Each structure stands twice: as C-alpha cells, then as structure tokens.
Image (cartoon, rainbow, N blue to C red; front, side, top):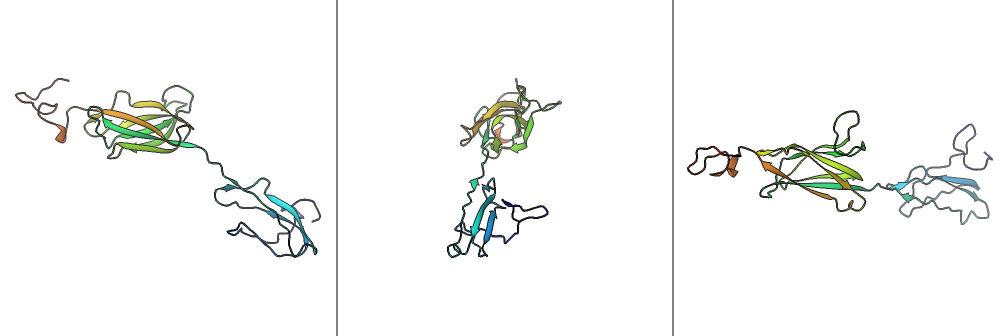
Length: 218
C-alpha cells in the first residue's frame, strides 16, 4: 500500500501472502516474487510469549538477491512462571505419634492485612482450598500455592479423636526460599472419650479396668 511499516487492517491494508508454521529447525520459508515483505508472528510455541513487537521487516526481495533470498530472525522469550510453593501436613496421635487418616483441613490465605484468621465478616481471608483429608500416612498436601502466609483450619477429626480447642494453626509462610522444598507442618490430635475399637484396653477409658467398675477420671 506504499505506506511504511506493516498495516494489517483498515481500508488499505498490506497483502497477506501466506501462513507458515516453523518446522523442527525453527524455519519458515516462502518462495515469492520480488517486493517488500514483513513477517508477523501470530502464535508462539508452547511455553513462549509472543515478541513485542511481533512484526519483522521490511525484507526487500529483488532480482539481484533472489537466488540467495532474504532472511530475518524472530526471537521468542520463555513465558515467565510465577514462583509457587507447597504445604505438607502430617497428622499424628499426640500421645504415641502414630499417623492418623481422615483428618480434614481447610487452607486459608492471609489476604486482609489483619493478624490471625478471619473466615467471616466483610473482609475475610481467602479460602485457598476447601478441604484436604489426611491419608493412611497421615499426610495432606497443598500444592501450587502463591507466595504468602497461610492458615490451616481443622474441620473434622478421625474417629475417636476430638477437635482441638483452637482448630486454627499458622501462619505458615510460603516464600521464595522454601518454594522448592515446601513447608512441613506437624499437628497432633488428642484421643477423645470414650475410646473405641482395638485401642481400648483394660484399665483405659471406656472399659472397666482390673477390679474397677467402669468409671474413670479425666
């Protein structure tokens, strides 16, 4: 259109010649007639950003350079991925250290600038994960967490155990420094009354002891 630079829109745009996808060598090659040309990158490979600007040229193809052609290089930059971290919780019996399955935890992100966890009101903290239950190894993991401070709130305990008076723990800081290793958290539960199942033995709460009448102190 005899206007400097590439115009792709408007009433008098330049002319689209072809669409080309780079091959395994990173090349796009087109055979065409002499003239002035631009390459416009419209889609970047996975994991890369479009360059800014995304137009390369002008390249002027003439009778004199037609045999060797004209060439330009378009460089892409890898997409920047935000650093994230993780929190791994281990839930155990407070008395004997045995791992406990079936404890459920919410993960909250500190977001309102007020110390401690706020789950209600006009400016609560942010619920990051609505619930993770510990497995048979007593573990529960929260992955891909943005850097920041987090609270764990226990909402359910394994059978035979009681929620702590304060079910909230933290804050736990996910930082650039610990993003690769994660934050390890250990939380114990106390067995409730009465005890149940095979863990109830003579002399323990919930079953009469030797020579006892079934009553017990706390």
